[in-house]
Length: 167
Image (cartoon, rainbow, N blue to C red; front, side, top):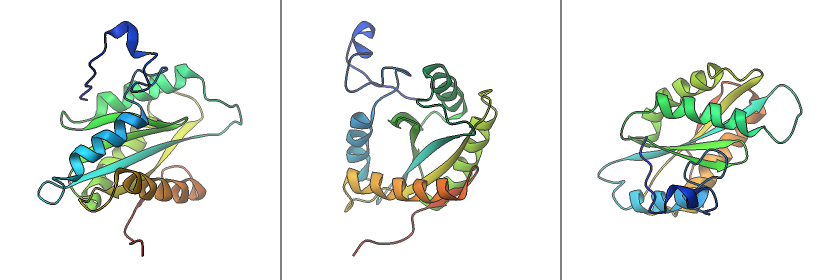
């Protein structure tokens, strides 16, 4: 996992660039990172993997200790070139090197990682979208979110990759 922050540790928790619970980069930082990577994605493909947590109970919001435990498990399971961030209240995002169809293998592994994180009743599903030089960071995130929403409607363990085009 690669974290880049230019703030002292005591200021990170209050920064909009960092998630206050997990101290991972926030969605703002994620979108900036997608913008950086998108320009070279034609030569060096990259994918956004959104991991959505699912719960068997209806307690809301998810306790910070659960999010921290899942974040730590995901971080421990990533390759050195992968980049982990928070994307929403119950979502984590990973930027992976490689095309979206290749990211499915990693996504299935990350679903298993969440299940093995030791948080009772928490499972995951995934939406994947490839980065493209002609797609804005918000559009890449929207595509991955669309797939994550579809995966959540099917249930735990589901991985869906964006393959359509917007006209």
